[in-house]
Length: 391
Image 1 (cartoon, rainbow, N blue to C red):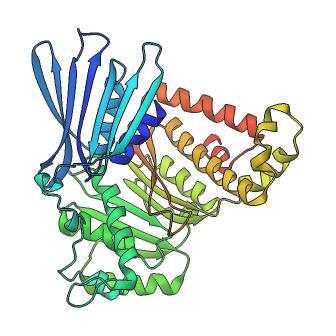
Image 2 (image 1 turned 180 degrees about the vertical axis):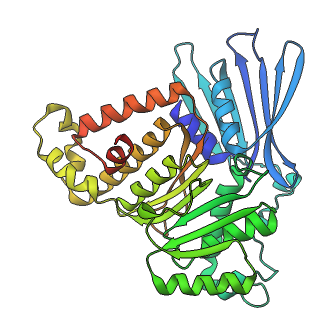
């Protein structure tokens, strides 16, 4: 079911058109489920229409909850068809549980304009109206046009905001929420978060940007004052030593180098953050540990020799294992975790975003713990994230 889960997580976005679950195993339960995108209070949500006992039940869910709900339903269905503006998927489940997935390009897609999502205007921050922080950061002109050389950055900012939009219902609306952005750098995304959450969505939000570069912090602080962003502040510091708050609702860590990501995740778990968004970078730690694995004579590892023998491939393997274990440790800590593509592979291989939402079940925690133990024993490794969360 992991492949189906990945398909759902990757396609429950603005390109999604419809899904239908059919052919139930037990007709005393739901006999059909339909899913379609709708606008609710200005937000893109997914409406499930469940047919059961001659009744129809409707529920509006965000992308994360929709994926989880459909995976639950698939325990009783043998077929799901998914349509997006680009692709058609057919997923068949045999009586023995074998999954067959067929996909093809959508030769005659329905217009996404039906759902007020014109592809030419498919951005949360739209071109045409100048946004002060984008102008000052060189992404947009005074007339509101995107600077050609910065268009990839413009797309990246909007993609990042989509990740937040998908889980916005999990953020508190009845009180001030606090967001901590570690390694904020020039703060394209920090300013974008504040603009989206506070200016566009009217959340009562306080955002703190942390970075070790004093000049960057000074410049960003000046810009925040200029825009009147009263609850956006920037501090020099490291997240591992940050003690400015007892409770953080969302932790963002983008391209924190090597084990700095692990310290950020540990702090987020300790704060019981409702949402974690992490884009790891430069995963060197396990690459060094895998040197011993590569030399191991254990017959079980012989199948990995075509990868472990070559430095570049081993380095990429180490990065994937690192991020996979980080995701599993978060699941063990009670989070629903997705590993998503942040930006196109053509721009950088460091494009994985780990999105975690506090919500998973006790069974999920147990399963994650078992997979962590098996993986670490197989590779003979001990990642920092494990040592931090187990101490």
